[in-house]
Image (cartoon, rainbow, N blue to C red; front, top):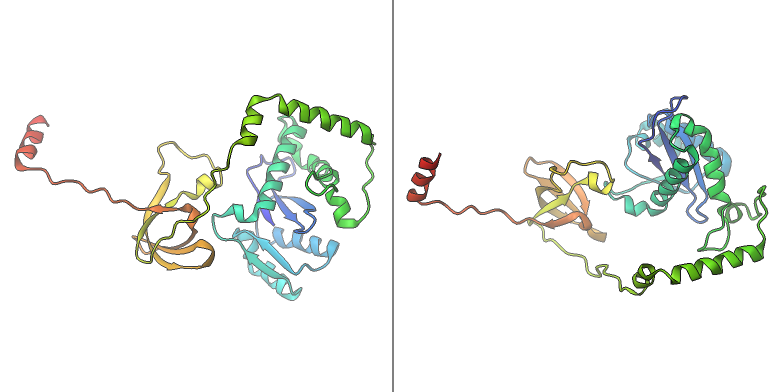
Length: 276
């Protein structure tokens, strides 16, 4: 569960979308909300509970809407465990992030540059996502959730679908770039770097991970930070030079290399003063 933000304010005052995904089937829910306050978020969670019952666990980000006493009290009453994600690690909630991308892309096509009433397009977009057949499972999210096929106004011919897939595969094979990329070996790292306690590291700017607009002159890494504790799964507890504490994943860390400035000679200093 997480918020999809940065939408233009609609005529009804909505600015963002609260997205929730059932982990097993991938079935999504989405609510257009005006804010992330202690009143708005619990209302959506209550509506979800009234629809499917009490889930065992809710995984969410560290947004303020999920940490208010009101929602924590409600989850405690309903015996719902709330699991918070590691800060600035959206890839750990990959299903929600992929759904956010799909919803944003579909809304961009449905609104056609007119976002004044994007709230009215949201139910259509979510309905289409629920009813489309997944290439990974071979079933729609609606079918995996409820066990019956959804009724849609368009009836597709199975033979036509198969023919279209064959044509698409032939199309892809004729593209040299796609063929080359499919045969290219992956370059993903198999061994994570390890930093010892007491070593100095730099931390990747969190705004880059969130794809937030960032000035070109802004620093890509922040720090240096001192490693205090090494936890499991590549999690590190860090301390800045000002004493601020932070928890980060190893994928955001690089070794800190200090800049050593060589001392200038007296002759060099006098020449520099003459130039000035």
